Length: 374
Image (cartoon, helix red, strand yellow):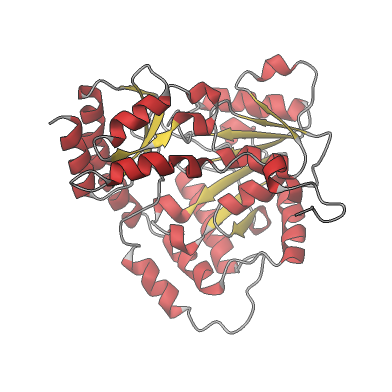
């Protein structure tokens, strides 16, 4: 089939292969285990959504009219309050926040929505969530993977992605480092986007996740900055598709103008439910405790089985290696009925690592640990 006139060519030519499709053979191998598969590959929440959020969704379910792309005042006020209360963000107005339909759709469309295209340079971390690159390539941008931005010399990136805590590694960027990155991006007129979707899950007092919106990091100004947050992990609302982008009001306004034209609207019942979720920290604390317990079971089991855990100070994954090609580690774990993600999904720097998710029930985490240390 030929491409439509003026199109950028078939998807296969414009985008990398969807990495999860490559897991099919090892998924089959893991599923053949007598005790069934323990799927620790995709980080999808498995615990029930909080009762107060489900009640809020039901209460707002009579919604015959179209919602607003900009979001309700209730939701934006709850977002501003949360950003200031939980993350210590500098003063924010309602015009500095915008609801998104989950976070992945914004990650994938951001370069396009900001008007970037061929000739524009987008920087992503060496080890990174694949959708950063997918979104940039979909817009026709050049993509460079690097953590050493000084190596770029005089080149001016249009867009710079950072991710702390990192998916996949769980690495946390210190506040001083983030401040330097903010200053570096501003000197070059680059838009800096900080993916902070795992900010609620820090496991080390020595590596507490922080936001670029904090005054000491952004020098009291959000100019040129955007931060992404998600309710998928903190509130177990992946099925609701509820996220937020916040920061520079001028950039938020630009995104709003584009999203209005495209009809990208968070459903009204979800907006009310998200506002309720952002106003409550007790359910987040309960969920954090669940993940901590699972981490405390899985990490020592992996270590006892001969895997080294790198970084992993935060987030919902363990970044593990046996010092061999990641495909060999995938097969070794699959032979024990445990499915994980291949480290090279996130960049060639992950070629000897696997990503192990904490997002499974207590009994399946226990089953994985037992299989690793029989």
